[in-house]
Length: 85
Image 1 (cartoon, rainbow, N blue to C red):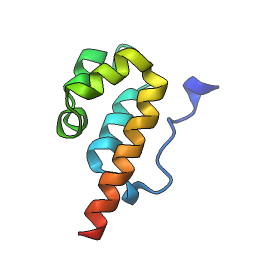
Image 2 (image 1 turned 90 degrees about the vertical axis):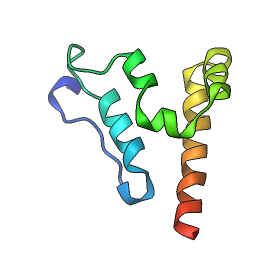
Image 3 (image 1 turned 30 degrees about the horizontal axis):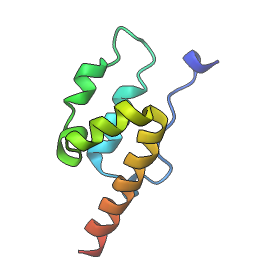
Image 4 (image 1 turned 90 degrees about the horizontal axis):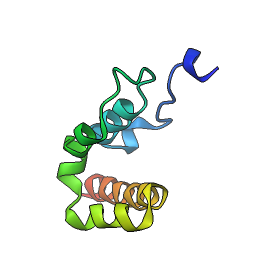
């Protein structure tokens, strides 16, 4: 069923940066041969603009699930600041 349905999308895309939306879309490509590699994703604009080396030590020590929760918190805070400015 997963391979036949389109990948999920953001319910409220205006709440998120274009870089995050592009990053997630690259992660959700269903065909593994077309999907970006981990190395390519680490060099994505979304990662480079928002995270420093501390981010990668969080990923290494806490695991991806904890990092994803931490990253989404930072993304929401960044989006809120942009709308308030």
